[in-house]
Image (tube, rainbow, N blue to C red):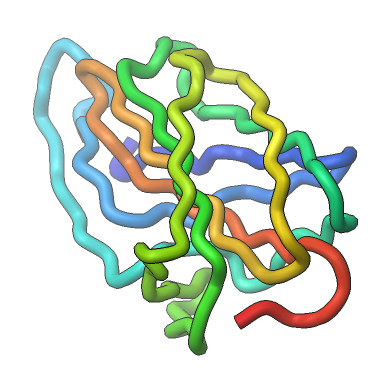
Length: 150
């Protein structure tokens, strides 16, 4: 693997593959080798199109791409603001740190969390670290309720 594989977000029967943001990753394919590369990307990287979900509490299910249990998993939810920079199949958003909500997630490949979000456009950013493999910042784009965020 030259870069980390994408993660998946599922909400209410819909799913979205993550954008892959900044990462440090073991490129040898063997976690015991410890050979890797670090890549810094601009902003929070998400797919181009948001997943449309109804307003109200939502259950977000995350599926991480490795069977190995991660050593750290942190979800940060950012209201989208401004216009993203488009890079081919993905886009980069400037994080709105003042309005961010952080949640520690279980150290498991599959997990879920219930979120209460007002209607709007959100970036769900998931930082994951695996011993021997490295770490990656995954990004998802979710439109909650009607209308446009920003």
